[in-house]
Image 1 (cartoon, rainbow, N blue to C red):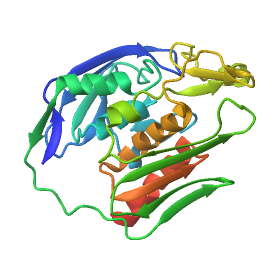
Image 2 (cartoon, one colour; image 1 turned 45 degrees about the horizontal axis):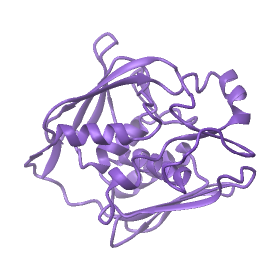
Image 3 (cartoon, rainbow, N blue to C red; image 1 turned 90 degrees about the horizontal axis):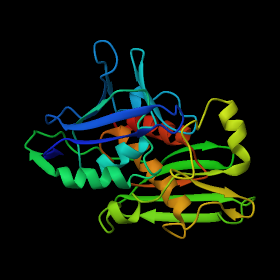
Length: 276
């Protein structure tokens, strides 16, 4: 069985990097269509598949591209869809970037739950199996996938220069703990001393204390946190969203340390090459 939405759901808001106001409608899709975006604001309404093969720019978010059309900061919405069991979805968007909302995947997850799921019978291929470990390394950062009897995600971060974060770890077993309560509420985070430089680079135009946790060397500027290790849980959320570009998760333990969207996507592409 594959699942899609029973009813459409919709959200609108500001994109983190573009600052553009966009509206997103997530609609049911037929079995086998997968998750894909449609740029309804562009001529011909081009479609962009939510697949690793379409991944492009990964500077502080993940962008998908297809024949000149792009959509950015897709990871939170895709994490919510994949973790909620939505295999097929048509995602209509009227701009270049998915809204950040409150900086987490909570609103998307709640909207999907309210829309409900519908199961469709489909002749599925054999489940894809990871046959050996795959690791992508960059300096002291890495992300790896190890064959496992149970799907699991683990993330470690280390920001020694910011004592409020320091070193944190988070682990999530999808079969043991609901995504909606364990991971979805964790918000994106940033650092006060980097804001000016990032805006000079044309990034985080839509960022604010309402949609991101902000930290300086003395602590958080906008507490309280939703979890003691909220930053690590948010990075795990990003990992789930980026690895959803595989279409389905192979049964594995995914472990990341000090990684990035770039490393996440590189791992997804490496896994795709091994198991296709």
